[in-house]
Amino acid sequence: MFIIGHRGARAVAPENTLAALRKGMACADYVEVDVRQTEDGALVTVHDPTVDRTTDGHGAVGALTLREVRRLDAGGGEQVPTFEEVLDLVLGRCGLVVEIKEVGTEAAVCEAVKEHGTDRVLIVSFHASSLEVVREVLPQVKTGLIFSRLVEDPIGLALSVGAGILLPRADRLSRDLVEQAHAHYLRVVPWVLNTEGEVRRAAAMGADGFATDDPCAARRWVEALLAVEAAR
Image (cartoon, rainbow, N blue to C red):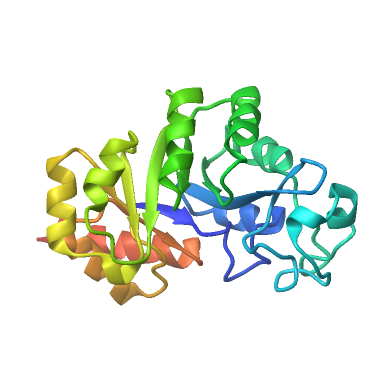
């Protein structure tokens, strides 16, 4: 099972910051960031529509300029990174999962990825339409469909937009989903698994990987699973 550091490594550093990414890169196969666009068109890594929860500032990301966002403290003195800073830090050293949070930002995200390199980049979104755009602009990049609510046919939806990975919320994971996905050559990567028991359960169902807030703890759990398998 491969490990994705959720928002870098949000359990041990401020989420979506360069500090969190560095922590995550120490143990994860991939690190993940959420990308939004500022009022003046810059791409920054913030999960929420506003900066209120994750910084000492207030307001919608899309109503703030890059300069205004950069003045904020994202925790521990960390700035909100630009997407370009993330690409510079991660690519060539670790895999990168990019979550497109907003419809309409796909072209800008794809252009930035194209300029920095597409090797070991995975672009994911809750928005199937965003994945369609990515497939058209960057057909060489793998994509993944995220879902948390009950979706009638997530496999069919993923296939219809050319996605190769399903990313269900942990409570939507089932052995039946994994088996059906694998039958259509889709990988299944649940989120967010933060206990050894959750990882063991996902492994037993056949999950291909998982996202976690603490990649180094998760690495220990995966290694323990592998040791058990090797001893059998």
